[in-house]
View 1 (cartoon, helix red, strand yellow):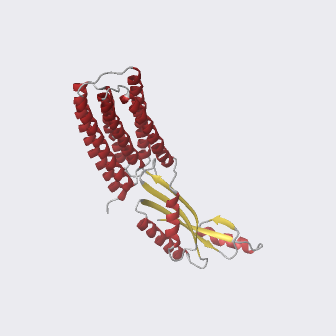
View 2: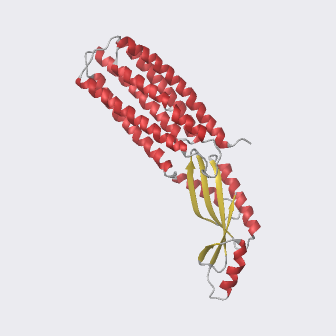
Length: 328
């Protein structure tokens, strides 16, 4: 059976490769028009498109390295490098926004004439089309494999698509004799890019510090409580390792059950979680037996169980919660 993390990484690499090829081809077309027209705004858009293609480097590297197996040094594997790639892409987006703002301000204070405006307009439409196509492709695959880095990269492509449209509107404005149309629209697009940077950064940094969506915890608890024999879910911890979920779940079962029966329930919980959460790749199930004399919570091994019970039998009866851990 093929590891699902490898399968999703292959999908991510596939999305990055083909969308980047489309972006680079579109950028070369725009570069030819820049050399013909001398349009500075189109040059800025061309640089953005080449930058979009360049983001394939950290993202592709992350998907490749993320497929490596865990070892003694990286016991959770290399999935977190995908979050590092996401931060790199955020920095690319921020740099693009700052550069777009700088060029727009330069053109605002130093207007320039541009030739072949109709060709510039066509080139801007081509830039928008390739960016939006790459954005739809990357965001769709990113949501399918739950990769925030790939989604952020798609949002980056989408913001550059709007930058391309600013070139089109600026060209129409210059055709009508309004020379400041291009820089003013460029500044507006810069603000839009910065807004996208903020939204993408929130998602990427949330995963970087092990944040998860609350609905995931609710879904896990819902599935666990529907397993026969589970009385309660006392604690649930979940984290993203790249685009794969790791979970630790504490469940309570009846005190009359044996260790073997508790283990069987843990196996059923493990099976249900993997079946209903396709992005879950690891689950550690801890089973707690609620005894008749319990108030304190003690984590023990089976060898120490009889000794603890013997000691407590000579004292005042107190509640005791015995926890057995099963990692599946």
